Length: 251
Image 1 (spheres, rainbow, N blue to C red):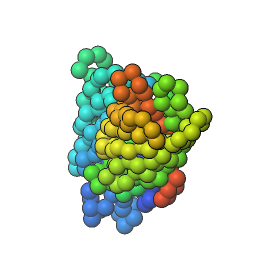
Image 2 (cartoon, rainbow, N blue to C red; image 1 turned 120 degrees about the horizontal axis):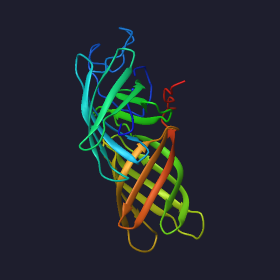
Image 3 (cartoon, rainbow, N blue to C red; image 1 turned 90 degrees about the vertical axis):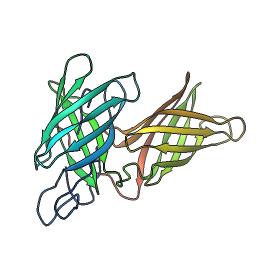
Image 4 (cartoon, helix red, strand yellow; image 1 turned 135 degrees about the vertical axis):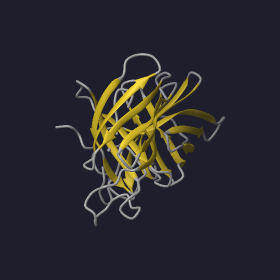
């Protein structure tokens, strides 16, 4: 959102938006009725040109969208979100900051899991996708096993593996590219993408970082955190328990 974001339905789909739903017997995807019900309250996050942002949305029975988008990394900023979505997942939203001009965005929502919506938004006149993942409270939008890379100041890089449970609790291992001694990674990610992570080296003191989490357009989990001037970031690819579906990108 802030510079774009939102998503659709399908059995065993995935997201960059996780939204909660009702209708069709209370299911988030409806084989028997042939179309998704987007009605519900959702939380999630996305990535725009400024950084990672949190999103809270409500979609009523008439498919009107209301909510709030708040920048988590890259500087402060909160916008109200208003808009609509149709049964096909075609969403139009307007982001209105406390100061400055409103931004119109469009995107195609899709369900990529139970209660999880993925969508790539586009600001008016822009071809740059803004990925957003939304989910209902019980959707566990971050849950899974991941592997990838990490970087920490000053100049430490290496490989990372992590497991995130349905409640957003994080556990993992960091292995530096040079030197010896792995570190453990622990912490939690909220449904709105706010992350608190602790890196504990084999020797020395643990450091706790705070920041944001979101799926990028390649469906990699991006964590960007800081502790004063010290920074920690990861790019993690989803490994299991199932393959993710791709974002619906504008052709």
